Length: 335
Ligand code: TYM
Image (cartoon, rainbow, N blue to C red; front, side, top):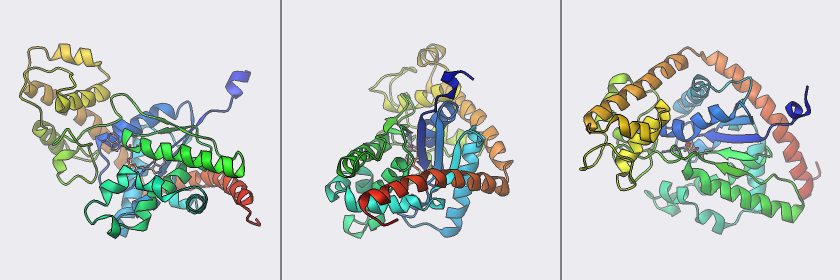
C-alpha cells in the first residue's frame, strides 16, 4: 500500500431533522452533496432527533420519520459501509457537550443573533418559545465539535450555525487549551438555497404553509407534475438564467442539478420555447428522479435500517466518548 492511500481521510459531519416532509431542497442542498463527498471523506451523517423536539412533535410520527430519513440516505446512494449513519440521541455525548458549551463558551448574545430562532419563534413571540429552540445552535455546535470535524456540508441557511461552531470551538481552545478542530462549511453553487416554488423570495421549507412550496421526495407522480406546472414564473418571455428572474432561475437550478445538463445547454435547448415546454420536461426529470428513489426507499425494511443505525451509533459513540472524556478532564471533572 502506498503512503498516499494510507493517509487518513478528512472528516465530514452533517445532519437532518426528522420533521416534516424531506423535499428536493434538502436533497439538492445537502444529501446529493453528501452522496458525492462520502466516497472520499470519513463521513458521519446523523438524524437529529434531539433538534426535532425543539418544536412540538408527535412521538409516533417522530419514530416513523427517523427511520424514513435513514432510508432516504441509503436510497439516495450513501453506502453505510463507507459512511457512519446514526441517530443523534443514540450518542449521549451530544447533550453533555452542549451543556458544557452552554456553560463555558456560549453567550446569550451569540444566540440572539441566530436567524433560525427568530424565524421559528416568530409566531408565539420569543418569550413563549422553548428554551431548547433558543439553545438549538449550541447543540448543533456540539454535533460538529465532538467529531473533530473538518468540513460540514450544508445548505446556506445553516452557515451561521457553522460559524458559531468556529467561534465556540476557538473560545474553548483558548480557555482550556487546544481541544477542538475548527470546522469549515461546504455549500454547493446552485443547490445551496433552493427557493419555494410558490414564492421565490423564501427558501423551500419543510414547514411551509402551502404544499405548493415544495416537492417532497415522497410525492407521487401526479402531485409532482401538478406542483411543477403551478410553480410561479414571471411575465418575461423565454427561458433565460438571470438574477432578475429569481423564480425561473430556481427552476433552472433544479433542472440542472437533476439532469446534469449545464445552464447554457438548458438555455439553448429552450430557445424560442415557452414555460409550458420547459415545465413539462422539468416535471419529467423530477419524476424520473423521485419515483425510482421511492422504490428503493420502499424496498428497505425497518430491521435493515435499525441494524445500520446500531452499527452507526457504536462507531459514533467510540469517537464521541473519547472526545467528551478529554473535555471533562480539561474543565476539571474528576473522571
Ligand atoms: P434541516 O433539517 O433544516 O435541513 C437539512 C439540510 O437541508 C438543507 N436545506 C436546504 N438546502 C437548500 N435549499 C433549501 N431550501 C434547503 N432547506 C434545507 C439545510 O441547509 C441542511 O443542510 N440544523 C440543521 C441540522 C443539523 C446539522 C447538525 C447540520 C443539526 N446538527 C450538524 C450540520 C451539522 C437543520 O435543521 O437542517
